[in-house]
Amino acid sequence: MSGKAEVQESKLDSLKWIVVAALVAVGVVGNSVYSEYSLLYRVLALLALAVVAALVALQTAKGKAFFALLKESKNEVRKVVWPNRQETTQTTLIVVAVVLLTSLLMWALDSLLSWAVSGLIG
Image 1 (cartoon, rainbow, N blue to C red):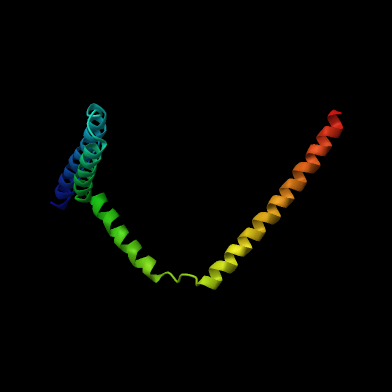
Image 2: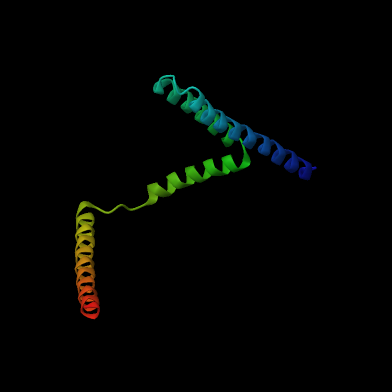
């Protein structure tokens, strides 16, 4: 019996994804068809369609999994130990120094190769 429920659920999920795609298509086509109307009204209509499409998508198995992933990500971000101001400043200065050193090395290599090619060509 659970096999039938899974098949039925996937059929409903497919139908929901078709509805989401149709809502997106309506938004795209509607935006170009009603291009003579105010941009504000079109943006509000697109936002409303996007909210409805997102709500429909969240009702699918993949949508629920995505929402669970977002909640888990939020919890993981809370666990991150962010660097303090001193660590951020030191890291930034190291990055700037490495970029400057690398750019000087690239400039020197470019100049050397340019000089060598000029010497060969004449």
